[in-house]
Length: 204
Image (cartoon, rainbow, N blue to C red; front, side, top):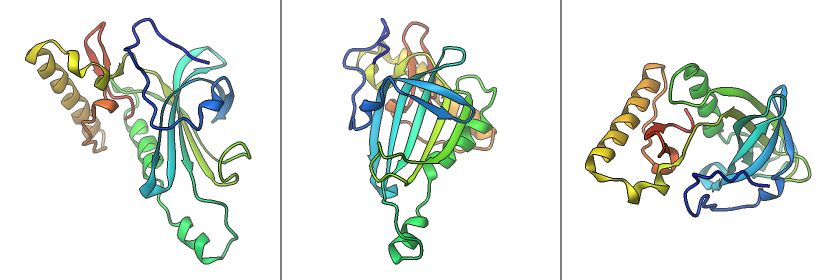
């Protein structure tokens, strides 16, 4: 199941992995609402945290709002409580999920950032690898545009590049003023809308 837009850049998306593509067309509960997963647009394994992260374009079923649902899936197995391996895995941090929820809370009402809708901490069902392990989900509003990396080779001149860079700096500064540091400048993590020329942060 896909949600291909007319202004979608060629070859979008580029998936590092696609183990969760089987969940396209399924709906998941996040907080108090259900979301239909339309399309997997990002999936990567973050090995330092033994965690799989995925991003879906989705639809909030109660009002058909187009949104984003993110998965933070711990890959370690469920282990017998009290054993040495269990103690080791229990100390693994959840920096991606924890930081993103905190940043989205801080960015409520701030222009240029997605707005937090719901989040959920749960355990994996048998459909996932290592069922019973931890899984966290975040639902947020979907911003216009696509990752800047798909347009960066086609930008028209230094003036346009400088304008995009200045807007990205403004977004980082706006988040800092709300108590969150954000130093990433990865073009994959900056949304660009070619129709309006506007720049957005896809996650706070």
